[in-house]
Length: 189
Length: 60
Image 1 (tube, rainbow over the protein chains, first blue to last red):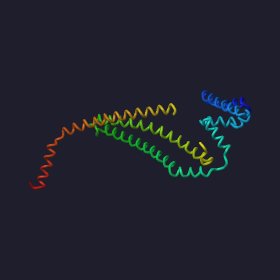
Image 2: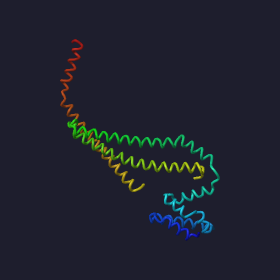
Image 3: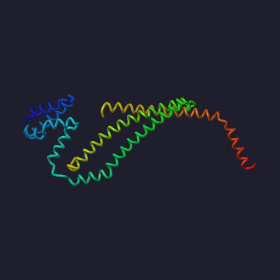
Image 4: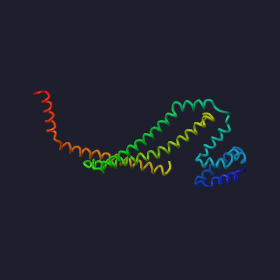
């Protein structure tokens, strides 16, 4: 497959991605071809080193950047079996740092959730007190307290939405990073 | 960071600011109310009663 055929096939596979992203990807692949041609490699060789356009497009669709894909390809090419150092690093790092940090963050999310529940329960109690007439003497301050607690609840909800989303994202990347080191060693990067 | 996340972040920041602002107002309102109650309270009567009780218990 030559450069034109490869680019055509890749852009077909990338069809559903936003136009700007496809343009950037095609540009980076063209640059990669130009660099390879400058080093004296043929278009077919470069296309073969990039792999199947369908697989490459799938990686781009997963949000992986071109330089990351190329690093992965290089690592796979240079792969010479499992690296003991990498595996020891993964075990020790997780035993003393990794798992503890993730558990601490999880505890923070659970704590925020509990705070939110307590906050809502407190609002409920004050509203019930105001309705039944037990708190009528301090009506105005308690109304302000309800408003304050409602704002705290909104803040906690925003914090939880972002916290859970980025916790899941971060954990996914962290597991991928661990898997990479476990399989391919510490590497140079 | 996505646009949606930035919106959530801004909402959270505004809510936190409002919570602090309203929290201070709430504290001031409670202080005024409780201060008023404390002013109305019959401290002399209450202390006088305690003094009498102490004196009775001491037998003076």
